[in-house]
Amino acid sequence: MSEVILYEHEGGVAIAIPAPDVDIKTVVARDIPQSCAYKIVDSAKLPHDRTFRGAWTIDCTVDLDKAKEIWLDKIRIVRNERLKELDIEWMRAMEKGENKEASNIAAVKQSLRDVTERQDIHTCKTADSLKKYWPQVLEG
Amino acid sequence: MAEIKKETLKTTIASELADNNAGLISAEDVRQNLIDAVDSINYIVASGDTENKYKFVQNVKVSTQNGADTGMFITESGIEFANGHPKEGIQLEPYPGAEYIQHNDLAGLTTGDPHTQYLPIDGSRAMAENLPMASFWIGASGTDDHGLKFVHKYADDPAGTVARNDIYVGNSGDFIFNDNSKFNSAQGVAKAWVSFDVSSATPVISGSYNVSSITDVDTGKFKIYFKHDVLGGNDYAAVGNSNARSTRGSIEDFDRNTVGMVARSGDYGTTRYLSYCVLNEVGSFVDAVRNDVVVFGLGSGVAMNT
Image (cartoon, rainbow over all chains, first blue to last red):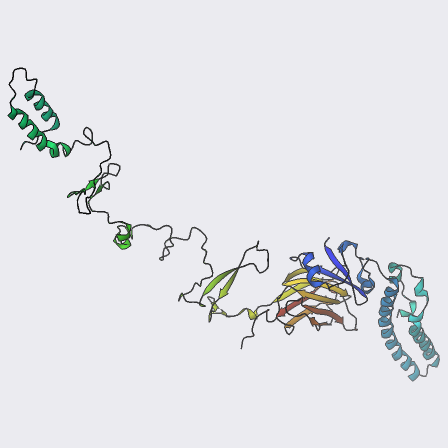
């Protein structure tokens, strides 16, 4: 594998990959912000999954708190799409006077709104377990 | 006057001036033999027999006296050098000295290839070695700033261990090809390009030119760093494309997306970078397997054509 340069950047970690014809020392001298602490590591030591790329640390680990925020952002995207679908279903139920159905849909929508507030996400102790965290309410 | 061969003269002297026991040798005998010897000196010396028998074996030196034109060897025929070839060993004309020989008076000036150290102007012989030109111009007119010239530089290597030759094109010079297409400036050439793949954990640069590195900032967010002084400023034209997916198995393997290349940073002499971000339709930054960027612009120290 090839070597890359890791340095802390805007609250995360940036990874500089030298072009094939450029020596890594040249990249360190020119492309890394001055007075910035950096590490040269074998790229094989980086996390193998980019799902939580924004949560990577300079020690080649995944910051689980940041990873949870990233995962919740992914949940929000799916949740918002699901809410749009349910808005249509709720309006149809109301048009038909199906109050009970409309009430059920409203309950599901509330569950969706609350999905990012659920505490069970904190039972995930690893990045892999976090990727498996997907509340049933998100399914159509 | 009797010119007598050396052996004949010696025989005559021996016989006519034998021991004078009988008192038969007269003064005339002595006088005549001495006259014969004197008369025969030139004949003996110029006998033509100097090759084998009577050659001079010591240096022969002649000198002028009191600056007069005397004491010289004078020949009306020629001089033969024994170590010369049968014909070329005979010198029939005086050698005037190197400073009085005119090059064009030499024989064989156009026969064969008499000057192998020079490149023939008729193209009859290719160069046999490299041709150093220093920093002089080669062109149709042979004047400064017209044609091509080569300049030896060590710009990329201050220690001067790696030689580099830059090629300069003079004023009003175009590269014109057989199809009459012209190439009159390098400003129309891409200053840099890169293609990289972010389908795995670490971005892989598939190919690049004038790119120093790529910095992976976050999901779908990158910075492309250019090599030293590739660009003269930050107002350049950047074109980018992404398929916004991590797969590339079919021609439909792409999602609608926006490639944003907004942030440009760097000053003269410092590192310049261009941001490259891929945003998909639902508003998420995404990593993609296909990421291509091409940059056109003015190089460092280049004035815009007007």
